[in-house]
Amino acid sequence: QVQLVESGGGLVQAGGSLRLSCVASGRTFSNYVMGWFREAPGKEREFVASIGRSDGSTYYTSSVKGRFTISRDNPKNTVYLQMNTLKPEDTAVYYCATKNGYLADSDYRQYDYWGRGTQVTVSS
Image 1 (cartoon, helix red, strand yellow):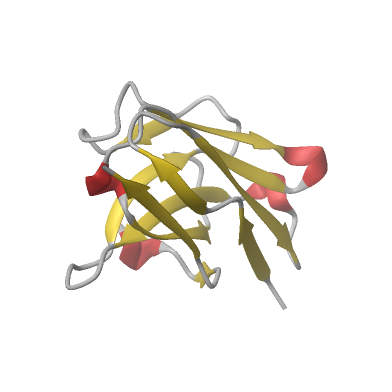
Image 2 (image 1 turned 135 degrees about the horizontal axis):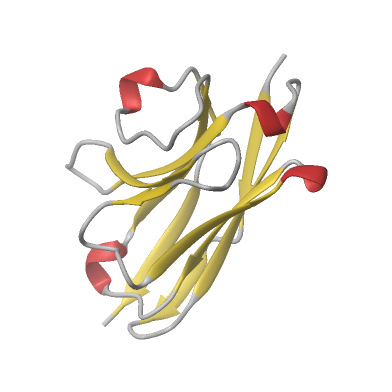
């Protein structure tokens, strides 16, 4: 059984930073693509960032490019999302997800396992 557990969310002022973590179990972590998505109240789930199997490919939505960094530590079965210069519009529940494949991918329909999410709130 694949499990993904996110942590690291919280309340932060605009301009601040947070680092989200997602620990995976139940599959060989290094063989799978990892992604971060977010869902704000009243909005659809949105792609944030993804990282390929080999850590050689990353992909970001344009609104976070230059502010967020996705990385992975395969021996620790963990993927991270470093979020800097946070803005109130980054407020959402952030979800970690995993899928088969090699390259980073923004299509949420391709991801087959999801975590329960962690709340990020950015105050103005």
